Image 1 (tube, rainbow, N blue to C red):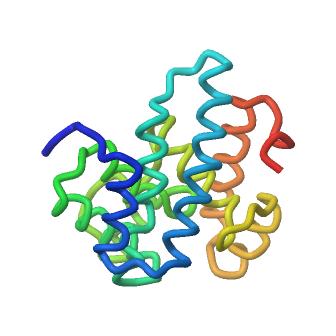
Image 2 (cartoon, one colour; image 1 turned 90 degrees about the vertical axis):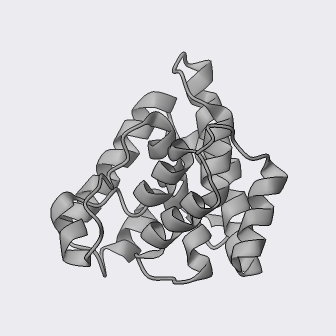
Image 3 (spheres, helix red, strand yellow; image 1 turned 120 degrees about the horizontal axis):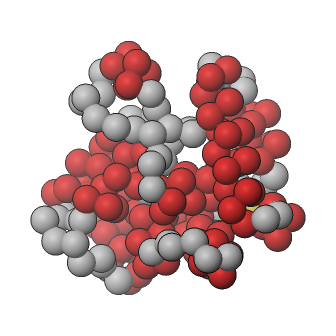
Length: 179
């Protein structure tokens, strides 16, 4: 498996070849734009962040939606990424972007392979967070996302999303710059 990241054009081509619908590709582009914006702010504030990895991971985070729109798109996407020979860093972003992360117990309930599904690296956290601020191809406040996800996710999952929000805001200083 190569550690070389695909170009933006290659990543978009992977989405199309996997069979992602145009709205999924557009969503990925908007998430990537916001994720890079967040990463640049982090970088300016002195945090070490791989901007190219953030962009690539964000572009490919939903590649599994070419096969399913359920929560399982994270696992399916990781498998697609592996089959494409993508770096482990990109595969990890794909499998760890859903919700505020998936615990070991939740993963077991979902029938997922034993693995880590909680975002760990700054790049993983940025992509996961940016995804929560994009509905379709429009930016939305975290409160709107939380309100909608509260209808389907258990309280601990919602708390993880709030925690992710608080962590990213603490890094960038102010979430109003993302509005």
